[in-house]
Image (cartoon, rainbow, N blue to C red; front, top):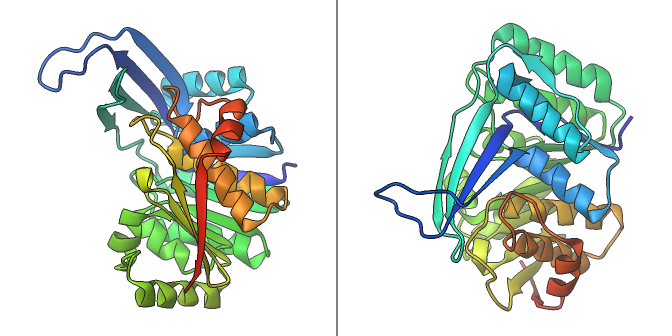
Length: 314
């Protein structure tokens, strides 16, 4: 059985068209088409594989003809996977990007309709097969028909078994699962404000929020800020990471590559400073190639030297 279980309730087949010049009001002709199995959890798995870690499995929901293609592409990439099959079709995510700038547009389908019977089957599937996993990662949102309360219930089952839980989601699922006291809560700056009403620059509010999480058992609070870097809070120590320069505006999968660096650094018992440096270098390396979490380990090593880490306290 794998050491790490990555749960991705709403994966997507990613179709990314690269154009010479993006026209938001007319026809765009693709010079390159990149088709990859995606969704935050599988993106994370791809990044972990690039870093050299493969003792994981990606699980969740797939279905239909798109699901079969999705599964075949995963196997071709060698990304460990074991999904629960449903009747409806796995969603497709469409993106069009300008090659020189990374400027473009994304259109995400909402996902398959999942029945109550299928939800029960999924929960039993995961709990029965993967209770021996030590690390549980909830990555991404859910399709229609999967109540956020059910996802929290699944997280609580693993929490009660003393698993190390990482949460990277949004909306109602984020709010509910944060209350379970995961080991690591990774969110972006907008989600911090929208879901919890906390401004990253408001030190008192941030301290109170982190303290409330810590009382529930959370050790790490990580807030990503896009091109402005990231903040890693552990034991009231605040590590602020910044990039010396911006490589590209293409950012699909950068948050997932970032989380891969966090998890890999944690597994290797790196210091918090080393973990944040690696995570940020992974996120930056992701912007150098089209396709979510398609990057080179060599780029990560090079970019590490361009990350600045500053330390303060809450």
